[in-house]
Length: 265
Image 1 (cartoon, rainbow, N blue to C red):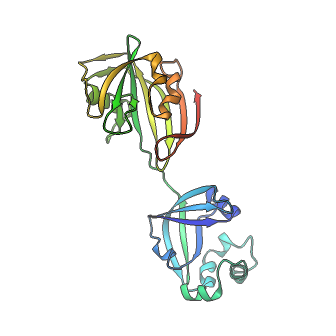
Image 2: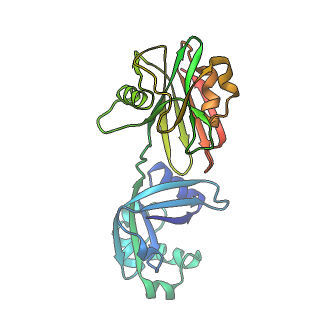
Image 3: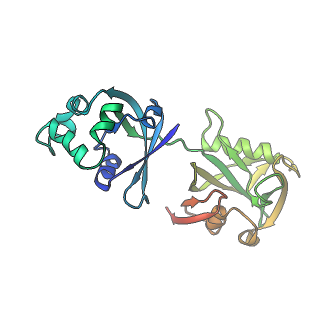
């Protein structure tokens, strides 16, 4: 479960840099919902225009702020405050909490660490024959856009293992010596990397219709004009080149590109 909390700018930077490893809060009803292995998304005050996600690794509760702040006073507060009592007084005078609500709820320490990102990685391959590229026109999802054959990893697969298997499953063709052409990172509510391959040699007989849609040979010069995912359209000019590209796209919920950076390696 994810929880949202706000931090002032300096504390936010301490969390982001890893300097701050514990977050001290009033143990009200909202904080009582937090469990070990939950995540906290910290928003940076005052504009809430920057965020950072952490994992909760341990939780400790206390009846009062003196006991709470005393435990790690030397590590977390000694360089800013002359005593534990001064930390408590600042919490009250700074408008963070009142003494009454503190006495009623107690307090809590969340032990935090940078959130471990799980990437939804996949592969894709542009196969070219007689200056035409094999593409799938989706018929069941994504609004009938075109995309190269490919798909997600299975356990134990390398990127090369994955694209050879996925390509064969979707087209009936076995790729021969596909070449890694680029890496396309994307992020919206989740994130991942597409390992983009190109190839010009294959074996087998083409399946005209895959589970995803219809397979079509498209003239290479027409690729940029096809309805594609915006992310893919951006790196299309970099295909079949003697250099590797790296693309980074920030997407909205409908896979439209909000921001992109692309470079060659």
